[in-house]
Image (cartoon, rainbow, N blue to C red; front, top):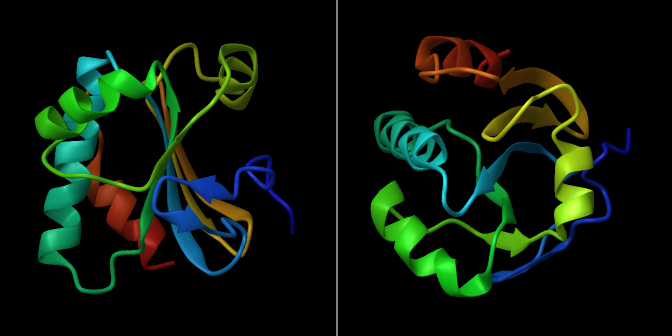
Amino acid sequence: VKSIFSKYTAFNTGAVDLNEGRKIVCLYSFDCEHCQESSRLLFQLKKNHSDFPPMFVLAFGEESQSSDFFNGAGGRLPYTVVEPQAFFQLLGEAEYPPRIVVMDNGNFLADFMNFEHLDTTAVMRAVRR
């Protein structure tokens, strides 16, 4: 299955096929506090669960904002900056970022959007599906 994220393969850390294996794709805006908080929660899950999949960020913003964002987010993740028009199309039914998608070989296992606080229990249920 090819997901809507298929064309995004070039990240700051190298090339990745988001449709291969289990992954978490995060759509974040570099100036979004909810996005930073979501990232902190995901980092905590990764720290506490050895089976937590790799995370990748499709970002809205300027490259120059990445350091401040990741410093506030609790750690660095592979990311690529997406053009505004494409980024907002990737949000789908989400009204605003963050949107977090748990995927397995391009198939969406769970899609978290329009939340005030990320439900980490639901994320772990999706990861272990």
